Image (cartoon, rainbow, N blue to C red; front, side, top):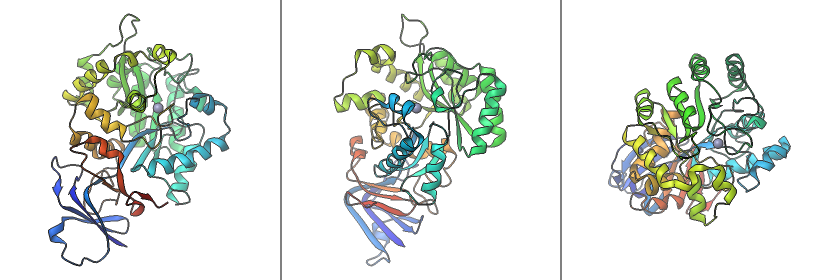
Length: 412
Ligand SMILES: [Zn+2]
């Protein structure tokens, strides 16, 4: 089937300026051409989808989902107590909700047992609706470490390598490892490293050999440094929390330079707190105590902006499924990059599309609007370059050629 998408402007995902009166022509699942309204003639063959005042752009790439987590305040209690069957049902609903918000590619960054693999297969076979899925399987963590209840504990280098190979054998597209403890896991230590640089480096070497990349969760500065020195492909959170209880941050600009020089990607999960602020959900005293960074968001944004200015490449993960972080909330990430961190609207959109596709190694397939790439396309109702919050208003969604939403109406 041939479709012609017409709007006031088109953001292709790599040029810094939009194309005025841009048009995308789609044939089945692929982009046939990018052109302009005055080039298509009076009666082009195909279904016309025209959105006056709209902006055509690539589909969003959500880099950090936990598809079986509930996003409810009780997310932790639910994920440790619910059966695989219950978690699977949550996952099916979560991937659908993600897709209808305009996310056409999602990376699941850690789930329990083998749930994500089954969901990925069902989406690929079009048994259920969801975005293109890349999955990590269960994250690799130390005994009693962050997310140990997901099922993959490994303490020594040999055990880490074995766990990594096991996830590849199951079908993992990416590997997730926990470089420090996390707030979600009681008794894990957020400030301290779980693995030495040497263990992480061996994991990177083995991942390179097997043709997969590694994403590592890191909050405390010791863990961030270990990831940077080991060459972990994608640093998650990169929070730079100080191990000294008298200070919040322990930011090391020279390590940020290393991250930039090595070309490692950072997923700062920048919007987690701002979703709450925007929705008017206050933080509890417990949350403020357990998450040091919440009391100084300005300080956090200043560190991230300094990393950006040093040339660090950012990708857009929301950490969906964590409490209050909903599967339809993607647009908060580019919004917070603009409003909090202070980068431009176009820069935040490119992080949300091309940069994230590059980090996943799928930029030949998706992430930009170019001839022969997958038809993963949004039409935003308005101009997100003038107001980044317009990314919450998606008029039309096409995912791998399938019409998901049109004129604001969900069709699946
Ligand atoms: Zn996460």
